[in-house]
Length: 117
Image (cartoon, rainbow, N blue to C red; front, side, top):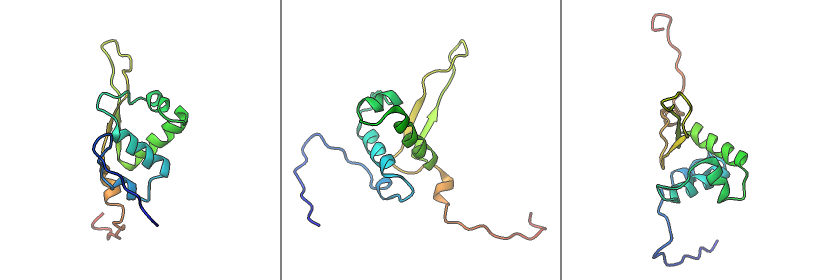
């Protein structure tokens, strides 16, 4: 297969191949994470904001974000204001897995004797 490359002087993003090679992620999740990593820090990273720059609905974006969260590429946090109301959701986005359970996925269970349990 031929690959045609162009000169990259501006308007491009350098990201890790880590998530692109992760077979556990859907193609939609890989594309969304790549896009999120390419956006500026002050971008509106809400589900509605992401839906506005894509063809997909908010529900489709939510599904991809939940997959990325489950895989350990996104952490979601939400606090409360002084009146106890929920504040906006904040997403922390990572190029590499942050979920230690995913990193140790290949470790097999071992049988322990009753004394060790």
